[in-house]
Each structure stands twice: as structure tokens, then as C-alpha cells.
Length: 408
Image 1 (cartoon, rainbow, N blue to C red):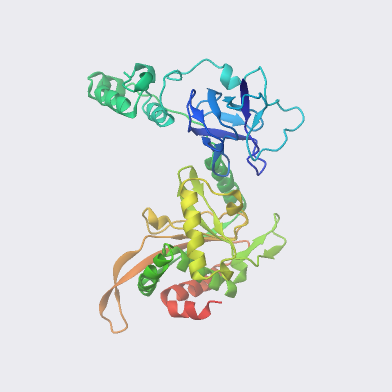
Image 2 (tube, rainbow, N blue to C red):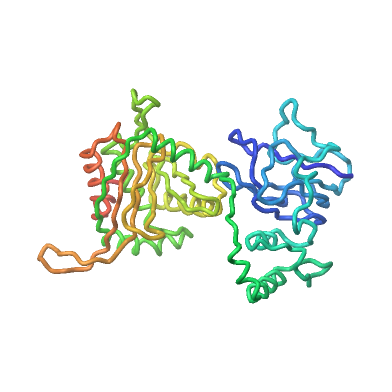
């Protein structure tokens, strides 16, 4: 008996999500708890698992379309065949007036005419390749079992098409592509617009000598690896930043909306901007001031891994107090970062470069240098305060022994 799987509450008041990728196809048999789709919300990427086993009868949305919470996501013929509603977990009871779980009326996406390639038997990954190349899968000769179009079939077809003389002529008729801004990119657009419009930014830039810190990291790296923890430079940057915040707590504050009050935050929840597959995400490590270097590195490993896949828990994105953006990881030395409101400061780290400098005897030596670009909220922080705070942070980084001595 056909039953509809209801898209459950995803949390954080989210009412809709974009179908990024189907992990199953119509006709597939799925097991209980098997992921069926990857969806993108305003916060992150989420996998939707099935709560029952059975045969997938119909996918109500194409990849790239927007599905609504408490509405049917796909049709399933359950193995137990008892005809009860199929509601995703962790779903909450639908609000009054929402669609029932089992209904004879299919959602609008299901009633729409089939799009190009929708009837072709293939995998979601192959469909994505076809979309990226504006390819009608119905035109691709299939070599797989039951006329399934394989990835090799698509690549071979594209190779022949690219070699065709017609490809030269068709390139001149290329059309612009327009796509909606959704998910984390839409959140970033709104947040950055509001931050620039409401916060008077100023930037302070300084050069930091990381030679000694890099040597310290090299000494500790193997010991951390023995505990299955990757030690990057970021835990050292964050721990030094937390120590500097103890001396300058105003950098860990936040003003109210009309900037008539200033709240000093006790927790050092230091954010880290990550270039993820779904756009910019800024998870933060909670209570850095209480963590050992090993604990901090382990938590950063976890956040980095989930953030790059766009699967950050919304709790990891909330309540940040100050942010580090490592733009040097992708190139560049100086930036003018935008403050992550309601925080009052953010720093952009440039790439580390080996550059010549004079030592205390006047000899030219190679040093490992990095540029740090601070942006501050000028309603709260003045230039002198920012310079002193940056100098305190810089001191811990340039002389790691002072950082180790100050750790609590």
C-alpha cells in the first residue's frame, strides 16, 4: 500500500529546505534509518533518514526544488504494508491545518510535468553531472542493467559532444544561468548586509612572526597524532586569543540593538569561518578559556570535518563571541573582514610567508610571517584599544612560552 513519508521538523523554526541530492531512486528498496536525501536549510546540510523499510514509489521533488516541512517528501510501499502514515524522525506533530500524512492529492511538485531525464533510470550523482552540462539524459545511450544510464555513459557522450563541430557553433549561443540564493548563502547575504549597514567598521593590520610557534607545533604534532588528533595552527591561535581576551574583555562583548548597553560575555566562544560545500559557515568552539590545547584541537577537528560537508549542528553556529577567518588558507595576505554581528571584532589571517627580516645583530634572516587584519565595531572599540589587544595576542603567538605560562 502506498504511503507518504512526511518531511519532519528539522528544528530552529525551519519550514522549508532545498533538495540537494536524492540518495535513492524510484524503485529502490530502502532500509529503516537509511538516508534518502540530503537537504539544505538556512543553517546547514542535513540528511533525512527513512523511519521504515520498503520500496520507493515516487520522489515528489526534483533536486534543486524546495520542500516544505510537514508535507509529503516521497511515496513508499512499506514492507509491513499496514498503511500507516510514514513520518520522518525526529518529527513533531503537524500543526493544525497541515496536510495529513496519507493523502490522495500529491504535492505540486508531483503533479508537475516530468522534466527532461526524469524517467531515465540512473543515480542522483549522474543526474547532477547531467544538470551541470545541460544534458538531456534521454539522449544518452545506456549500457547498464535494465537500461540504466551509468556515469561512464554520460562522460562518453559528453566527450563525443565536445569533439563535435556543432559544439563550436553552440558555444556562441550560450545563455546566462539564473539560480535563486538559498540556504546558508541567503543567510550570509542577509547577515552581511545588516552588519555593514548597522556597524561602523574600522580595520587594523599588523604582521606577526610565527617562527617560534610553528616550531612548537612541530614538536607537539606527533604527540597529538598519537591520540588521533590533528594539530593545526588554529588551536594555538584560538588559545592565544582567549588569553588576550582575559586582558581586554571588551573584545568579547556585544552591544544591545541601540548601543546603549554593553554585555561582557563570560564565555570565549571563538568562531572559525569555514568555506563549506554549501557556502560560508561559522561554527564556534564553546568556552575556549576552559579547554586544554588537546581538547581544543579535538573539538576543532570535529567542527572542521562537519562544517566542510555543511552538516553543522545549529547549536555549533549559535552564541559566538569573536571570529577568526583564515583567508590565508586559500591565498592572500590582507583582508577587510565583515564583523559577524552581534560580535564586535573579527580577524582575518593571511597566508604564512617566509620573508627576510633583520635580527637583533642586524643580520638578514628568514622568518615565518603572517598578516592579521582586524575589523572592529567603532561604536565600542577605538583604535588604541584594538592595537593593544592585537599586541597582547601577537605577544603570545611570537613567544609561545609566555602563552604556556599564562594558560589556566
